[in-house]
Image 1: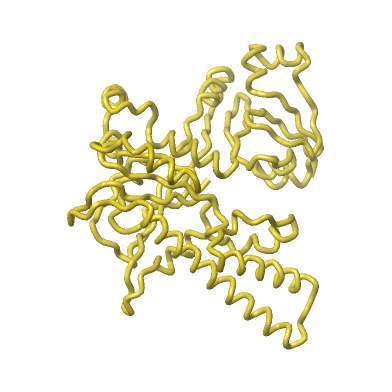
Image 2: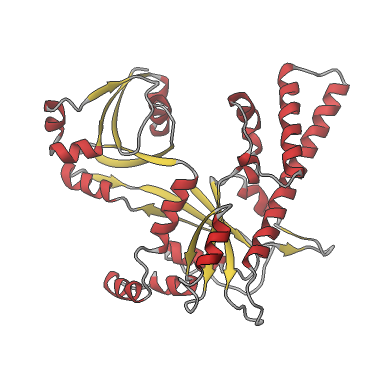
Length: 355
């Protein structure tokens, strides 16, 4: 899963990035449209994988991973227009989820925070970016139709893009639209920014952290929101586990920033984890809720999907309850599932295939 950190300049994006990844990327007080994004891949620590590894004693243990990308903030171009740099927008479209970092502290110039206004400004930029993509594509389709190159597929694409255009002009988001399977397939390649899950990170000061219930409730009416004390949590990431725990208890923080954001990202993107186990490797895999066994097989390797026969399946909870795979078999919890089986969070799969 790839999460893009976006926001206005001086919102603390890079501070949050450092807190999440343990990196020491330079924190600046200005936006540089030409700067490359900071990128880091971290393990998603799952206690289930840790326990499975203890049971199977594999040669390799592989947690699911999450990639964080810290994009440049909104910048002003030579014409005075404020927007996301073009290079950043292109990369943002390839992310799975966007995390909007919003300043909730007094900045270096003494300006008070205005989170609702900041959220609205970024929303507008995301919407405009999608409008431009939509309008340009409709122009190309209209030109092709004028030249006699009209097909059922191009007509379907035109119809769904006009629906999206209307939605965007009404200040709606693509992710809020009700599209059928064919329409979703048609627009998948556009990677509309407003079609991505978006969560808000309220970046508060140490003094105000935990004291923003009304603001969090207001933001939460539209978006999933988590609150961080960015600077504090960045400092925590550099401490050993014992010191970190003491400081977290002092701030009444029960989980690390990474754990809280990971859980929120899984929730809004409808992601789940399934596992493969054995003495060679225990590994976690991410898929979207509602995906089938054959789709899960394809996440492991395309050959498994292409030659899928059936899946040997049991749940993590059944394994823990029964104590071993033999116990799972003996109690009738072991199953053989076909390609249409909908994988559940915590399923342990072994794919039978033939290519």
